[in-house]
Length: 129
Image (cartoon, rainbow, N blue to C red; front, side):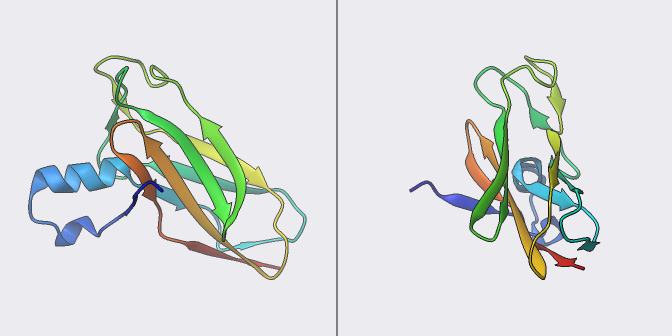
């Protein structure tokens, strides 16, 4: 089973290189705090907040997955060069459209870097009304 890396508050990290490493691999979830049951709801996942990730042939973000608890809701795969290719840097971003069910959803995103493995977001709780 692959190791799953998690975001650490970069304000608590001393070395700039470590801040860069943690931030540019971590997925962040952006969406409203509540959603209407059975209506399309947009959830955006962006890799990196303050730092960009390389888009090299052998080092790029290959996928972003969105879960509700342990259930995989959606997955987007990317190829090297999606953000411009060799030497380019950018933030891989995808907006998923889901239909909320139940009373709440617990979204968690994972990004997969071809060189540094799986990175997991903090959970985002969305109340379903």
